Length: 415
Image (cartoon, one colour):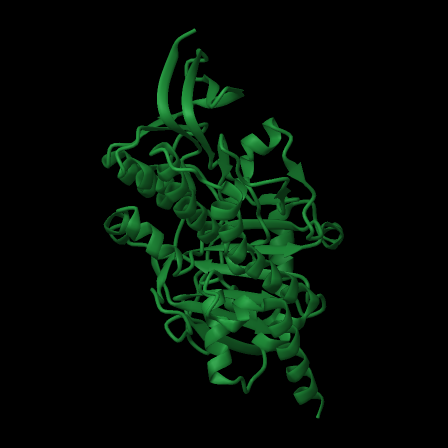
């Protein structure tokens, strides 16, 4: 069997794989990316957060993304029972970019991967990891190429950026149940035909709408620059049992049940098939060892409600690249202390607000009509992806702060 040698193998060429490979390659480290699919390919996670723009720039990919003509995004809008509110990401507590893009992921992921390749990263499409063995301090990967031929790569380090594929967690029996209840999403791309007349709507923002009768069921509406929107609904699996098995029919009915969306999408067309994603929340026994690290969704995925997936993926790429470079230069790296723990600061912050969304605390805060401007800036920073800024009290003490704030809001509303 053909055997090759490199320093780092990255499994997956999505956002975390492309950025981590570019960051590592820039430090004169040999890296090979193996990607099971051919790009472009469909993926959800289409509304980016401003915090990820810092990593895109660091990886030398900002010009490539700016040239794609993606839909500009400067915030998030929410609607519940006729109440509409917005968060402007430029008006936030944490320094850093306040704008980003809403993207069709096939084009976005390809632009990142092409940028990495232009920088000198070798990406092998339609190559699939079949097995992984650890021999001393080296890793031996058996890979199947697009012709069905197998070969091996011997590497110093392996980074799993396989996203929902979770290749290493499944291969190495690392998966653990998520602390979040199982939820399901159904979604499609629609031609929205939205007219701005007499409708509260800002195409520069993702719109999150709450089902009028089930406040733990929510809709996303993500507008793109070409008149298309990503439209999806998230709820516990049992909720969808009352709707048609035909997911397009179910999506249309669900849109009509929320008055704001019914008006907004009155002339929408549904030319595309619908997709479904269930049981997406995931956890693992550990995120990294001296042999490998799990990036982004391969390690942990929470929930799509705050579009945190790509940002967590890119922050994991940033942290992992720093650690890999140091280890390959002969330094001692404590992967738990220097990779997993810093990454989990942001993941756990997002977890607090995801749980707060579903238990109602965060919804009450978001829809409160007379917020303290400074506190709103702190919440806006987290919604913009700055979940690692421990100078923000709503990051550093997220659970306590959110609980106290929600209690204040509820007491004020009850007066």
